[in-house]
Length: 271
Image (cartoon, rainbow, N blue to C red; front, side, top):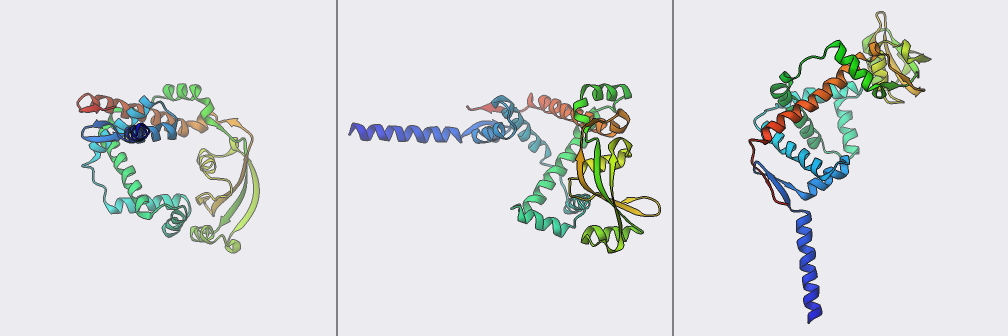
């Protein structure tokens, strides 16, 4: 009998622990945050429990702040079309790829809606607090983050050229080389224009860049491989430096915004 009671007590204890593990850890402005969510964030981005809690508090505050932001279906369609164009694929092809990866189209559209909401929220609530950087600020940021601007010293490419944009787009869709010319080239990254360099660096090996208008022809590159290491000169890296600086400032501005918001919100810590 004692054994049965002991087993029953152990089962009850295990059940209670399970409930605690997946229970509500805190309530932010009426929205619950579970211990399971906290653990998931800790594991996914390798942060401490307190950091995970703060990120989830910010997530709930952001959702609350964005609840009245409306994104129409056309805006979602336009964003998806833009993403497809950047990757040189059609929207139906994108749908097929996502399906093969196990991502439902409705879920993908929902993620785009959330991203657009965040963009709109940022523009309306936070962007105005960020002042444009001075030249000295950008140079200081570059000097302090040179390791972020290490790039390949050379790239191996196949250059495809066509006499019209239509022919180039047709080639990129079909990969039929009948209407294009091609040549294999190796370029030093320091000799490339900032625009072309950025595009090539953003293109995965084995993939094609978007078409470029070269005046009398249209050009696209297939990136074969990237080799060596070099630090981008400041002038070539200016766009990337500005982007990184802006991202850092945006993160800080968003964090400051929600830190202020937290002082006026009811946050109940349960465990």
